[in-house]
Length: 392
Image 1 (tube, rainbow, N blue to C red):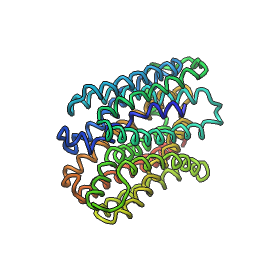
Image 2 (cartoon, rainbow, N blue to C red; image 1 turned 60 degrees about the horizontal axis):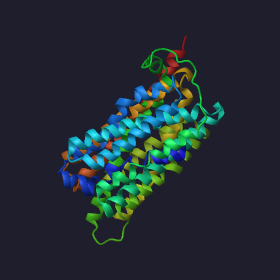
Image 3 (cartoon, rainbow, N blue to C red; image 1 turned 45 degrees about the horizontal axis):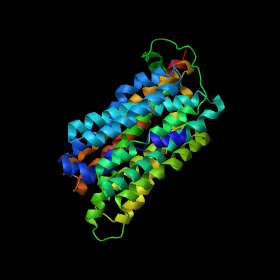
Image 4 (tube, rainbow, N blue to C red; image 1 turned 90 degrees about the vertical axis):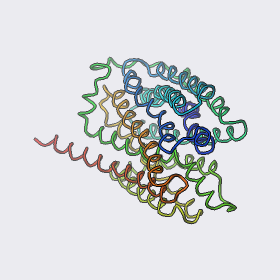
């Protein structure tokens, strides 16, 4: 399943990878428009995942996985052929997001349906951590192909990736889900589950920060390189790839900290540290590129370190009869705030002077810091509510 997910993710950041060099100048996009284009993927995901993830409470998740992966591949190819501006690109990229909605959380459901309960925490963390590895390869392949063969070729190549998930599905043993409780889109039991909702809202804060920085990391490092012309520093391709690769061990390590010190305590500490690092990057945006490289490397660890702990916490806190619906809520909130993060950072750049301004990047990273600090508040709220509801 982790191998299949690497394929599903190959198109995942194809648009952010080529945004700064090809699409913004070629399509004459503002920062907000570029954020809207990149965020269309998350928006399509957000719209579709309530139905597709909830459906896995009723049918074997493999069937949803196969259909979603096929749509993801098809829409990626279509983007390469037919995208010619903001609105055609956003429409096609949102369809690719719909396809991925049938791959990520349904893939997690397919995995947990085939595991013993005691195996779930580390297995779920490995699955979510492989997400970051897949994004790293998406950055790498998209930029390499675009630089050598043109940006449209990047979509033709990465579009083959989701076919690997289809192959992985064919190797899974069939599982018949338990008879589902309630209606297909009945989220009332999920909303009443305060411990699970704390992790869901915390995941939303995580996704806001994660997709905000993923969408704009290449553009930020392009700004750093332009300010330090002639300096022997890594290229945006190298920085974006390493940023994503570091996320996999960081997510696993974060979950181990959660198991050792307590899930809420570990997640809160990681989120506060991440906000601090984001602010430091913004403050020193005009400073030494080597200092910035070090800060970006630390940020590459703090941003994803809470991911596995949040997702495994949600999975364990979910009512087993509504696990698919809980995963649907988890993804809906997460990817809805992902789209907001991509657009919000672009808007902040526009308002504060554009991506050629150090002040604008300070504003952008301040927005990311504010977003992630919502996570500890959500977790505090869920624990406070849980105590209230247990009191006679």
